[in-house]
Amino acid sequence: MKDMRVLVERDSVCMGDDCTAPNSKYILFESGISLSLLLSQIAQYVPDYSGRQHTIWGIEHNRVPIAFLECDEHNEYKCILAHNDISADFLNEGKIYCRYFFDYRGNLSTNLINIRVSDHSGARALLDRVKAYYALPESERWGW
Image (tube, rainbow, N blue to C red; front, side):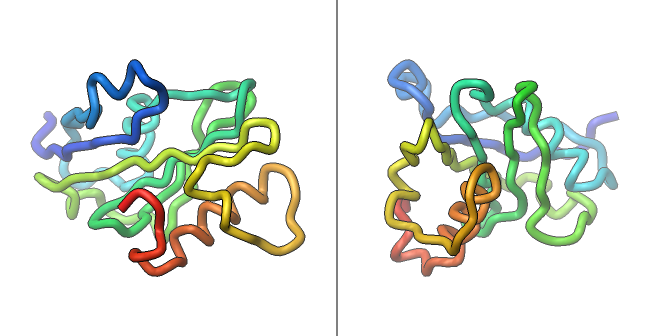
């Protein structure tokens, strides 16, 4: 029995998406499920782009990252929690925002262009940049 719900919105990923923005949907979930289990449902909601570009979705609650969804080469999302896995009940009747980050053959999403990280390369570098983006004060983050 589903007895809780959370409103999920996401960034647009193309012009066609802009027509339906803010691309919102209620996701129903059972009381007591873990945040990681709820995120597997959210992963079915966000578009995937694996094979064409490296994509990470920053999953935010009250503008604070609670997790990251990273698309792998098999078009499946891996969940990386920002904190310990806890009950998702705190999200009931709340809102989650999914922020889009990508690296398409070295071309970064606009919100990451000025984010610098240390000497990491490859897949790890994108996640490091996304985490560095969230470490900035809100006033310096693009998109808010």
